[in-house]
Image 1 (cartoon, rainbow, N blue to C red):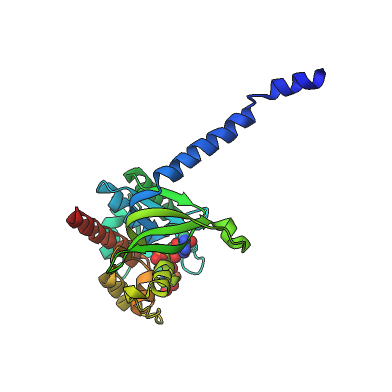
Image 2 (tube, helix red, strand yellow):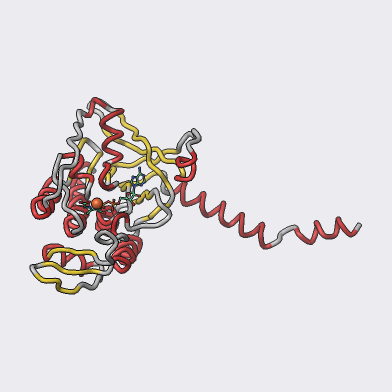
Length: 269
Ligand code: 48H
Ligand code: FE2
């Protein structure tokens, strides 16, 4: 008799409410963001910058990040010295995000990595972008002749890390931005699995900071219909030199890809 009473008392316990709130609202978000205007893969400097400027234009934006944190390569600064260096041309972007900077001589400015991560992410979120953490993007969807990238496939990162095969879920999108950094993971998958797109990855070249910073921004943009590239991934796709620990080019590339994607999508309406 006493046992039955205890079970009745437990019904509707706080734990049940917490669990159900997580399942309902988590699933609601996944449902809502399974169909977007722009899917950005990677929440590093270029991806977060792109997210803010795209969301600000009223587009529905999701950022898919493999880790359970954002910032990509910002956190480690330069070989773990806690400073991020940017050049003068990128200062307007820092000002947009209200990131503080100190002159470091020679047209360079020093920024605190934690502040940069926090404010880039807050800027993207406040502009309306959704950041989904712990998701690994491992495939693309394409349709049509000529082919166009129309979606992505994702699984939870811990599942991907476990090595167990679990079938992924989809996100439908009008544009994908590969902001995955050095490995250009989305463009690599598209090049390998959709040869019709005719993408040839050139592979990143050795460091030449001032040349790379310019070329990365210059080459930022469309790789194939529906597929765009920003940040360090641009060097991998177009065979450009790396720049080492200077981040202005990443921010400018993120802003540029946002402008290009927004313009292309507006022209398609
Ligand atoms: C989900 C993924 C996947 C995937 C990767 O590396 P990042 O910081 O990328 P960028 O391009 O914004 O910035 C590059 C910069 O950090 C850098 O490395 C520089 C300037 N290097 C110069 C040099 O010479 O070395 O961020 C990419 C993000 C990371 O957070 C990854 O976890 C994430 O993308 N990511 N997320 N699915 N398949 N692949
Ligand atoms: Fe790097």
